[in-house]
Every structure is written in C-alpha cells, then in structure tokens.
Image (cartoon, one colour):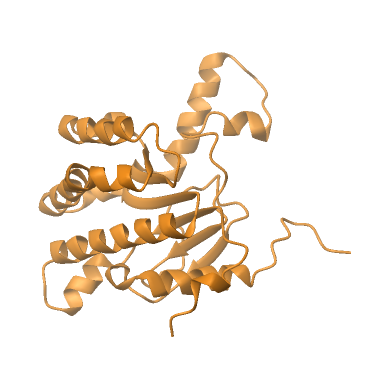
Length: 236
C-alpha cells in the first residue's frame, strides 16, 4: 500500500543506494542481462526524480565498481553506454530540476569518451543548487581510502585526525549517508562507501532494482524514520 508522502518526517539528508538485481531481473524473464540494465537505468531515473521532488539533499548511486570490469566486455560496454546516453539525453531534465551531478571513483581510469561525458555532466550542472546527485563510477571503498592515504603521504604529514582524513576523500564536504538502501535481498555493502557508512542505517529489500519504484523508496524512508539513531550514545 502506497503511503502518503505528506506523513514523512525526519527525512534523511543523504541516501545511498546499491542498485542490485538487474541481471537476475532479466534472467527470471528469459532475457539477456543487458535488458535488466536498461530497466535498471529507468528505475534509477525514477529514484533521482523522487529524491529531488521530496527534498532529499544528497543521493549517491552505486553504478559501476572497480570489480565490474571483470564482467563480459559486451555487458560493461552496455552499462557505460547507458551512462553516456543518460547524460546526453537527460541533461536538460537535470538542469530543469536544479540537480547537481557529480561522480566519485577513479575517474582518471575511465575510457576517454566516458570521461569526456562525465566532465560534461559535472560542468553543466555546476551551478545547480537542488539535489546533489553522486554517481559512483569505477568506484571502490577500499580504493577511496587508499587514494586518501596516498594524498596524505604526499603532504609529508605523519599524524592526522578523523576530520583531517575526511578532507582527503573524493568529496570531503558531503555528509555521511543517513540511510543505505540495497535491493535484491543481498545482505552486504560490497565495498561501497566504507569510511562513510560507519553509522549509516541499513535497509535491505528483496525487490530487484528494476522493480524499485517510488512506493518501494517510501517503504525505506518510513522504515528509516522509525529508527532511533544514537551514534554509540544512550539517552538518559
């Protein structure tokens, strides 16, 4: 049953999503995996629009990990083409909705045509002040931490604090996710935002990503607002 958006309170400032289950969605229908990715891209667009419309400030989507390069070349190329097509075809929509697009990951390792498109999306939405949309592309949580450590070593520093360390992450000014959503029934975080998820509320659903719609998003948000976040402390 679809719940009333107006009843939402305590909206998370930052939602992160592991979009899982595209391949299984296609397999259950006797279709090639790429069909699942195509439908998954539509689900991502719906989630972006919904998050923007209800006032979430930050949304981070795990689109492509460093490990995903090990998939069949045809599938990898299809996923990357979906990204290029999204930016080329939906850029005006992002601007109309005042959505600021950013990418996190080892962008310098991306193919030149993909990197060019990534820069295009970032540069064109630079002045947008609505939803901050982060796409994790060629991303690894461990790699982000290693990259931060190497940046620190390059400065010659021998001792830092947690806040110092945060300043060397891909986007240091972004608040940690309040809520992580993972679809498809898998109960793990798969090397995603390892530093940032320390106190994030986790929500797992059996729904495969292509079937994740506004109603499923609402279920996660209502579950989140029932949580008591203490960050290791207790109420007296």
